[in-house]
Length: 437
Image (cartoon, rainbow, N blue to C red):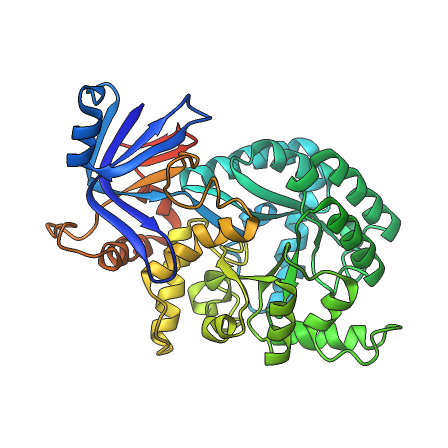
């Protein structure tokens, strides 16, 4: 067993976060397979474990905070190099920067190199689960599957129309590759039409049917940008069977892309009728605040997600970074952006506790892995990170979880591009992946 001492924060819901100011996270098992054995106060740990707590297996982080590993429920790993490029509009940004960058992943060796770098960085910022978009290329997907550490579902984007020639697949090729990759990777493979603009109805219908039979997740983008919505509706109303379609969500409903294992990124501009459909089908939304943020904050300026209306409709949702629409990999930045954008807009309820839950346990619940990941409980995977306690001499013993998190988020926001520096220790299933003195 190993014993990690520190202030422990344990997210449980939008309004509840367990807090042990002087706590001990007890980990048992070999590195790479270790589980959480116990979560308790130092006093109780000393009584229960006594002489088992030796200097060789006890790690003192009482000046720091221990958090569960994050779930980033929507990001494009192949867009890492374009995350800071100028963003005037979604569709123009895709054409000018994103598509050329993704074309490079046709080279398997380039894909291997980039995947190793990217997923090492991801681990260092404490993200151990989520939903990932790759490029159209099988080699890029293979590289991501090899390097990703944690509970990730990963999909190769499908692009069969309205796409650059070098990134366009035939319908038969897209469907055939979907069958092949699901057979190879099973439930780790997410069926991933890029969005309705770039993927034909036939491919979405047949692919969704294949994915549903294999009980795989499906993922795409929905109602991120008003220009995107207008273009999508105009495009589909000119197609047989979609002439009278009323909304973006209805298109996905007709082709079978919605459901309890469906993840729709963004969902900013949704009508009440669309939210009703998403609720009925148990489709989840992934909110990406740093990507949707104003252009002055290096986002795409798509708008503010109405989480209250979403929750009233009974739609599940979690947070994502949307790299590279989002400029920063760390979920600390995503959580801070969620809190600050709503605060500026005068929207109440966007607390730090809510942000932490939506970046951890909520994602695990949506992916169906909360039995072994997402927060701290005996028997769950020992996935956690340690960050310095911020706020000078203030004692965490006197502060509630909201205050502790608010200071950490603020500290991260002061240096958006180097938030990995916040993490003193990153541990995946008991194996230390990052350690700073």
